[in-house]
Amino acid sequence: MISTKKLTDVQLWQRNLASLIRSGLFTRAGLGESNGLRTIVGVYGDGSTSAPLAKYADARRAEDALELVQRLVEAGQSAEVN
Image (tube, rainbow, N blue to C red; front, side, top):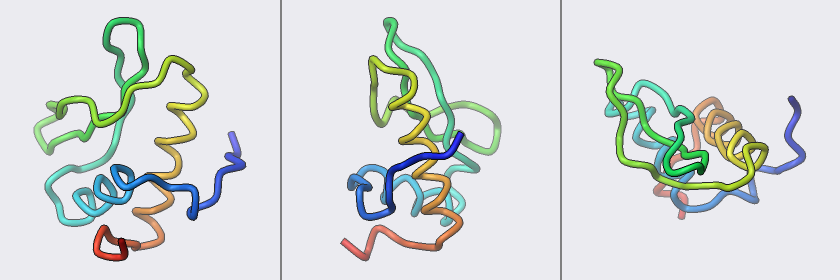
């Protein structure tokens, strides 16, 4: 799925999550579910997950948000840019 979102549309939590992945605290970002909402979580090296960093009622919005985090990790943009 190709997202129409641009890296300039990224929220602060997404930049921070990407920075934490690059630093090694999390191995990746992942999707979860809580009370019927799709969540974005950080995944630790042992496979456990963080508390939800964002919640979405629409699964497509959650997938787009996750894709933007992955693009940030690949682009090497850090939270310090803010």
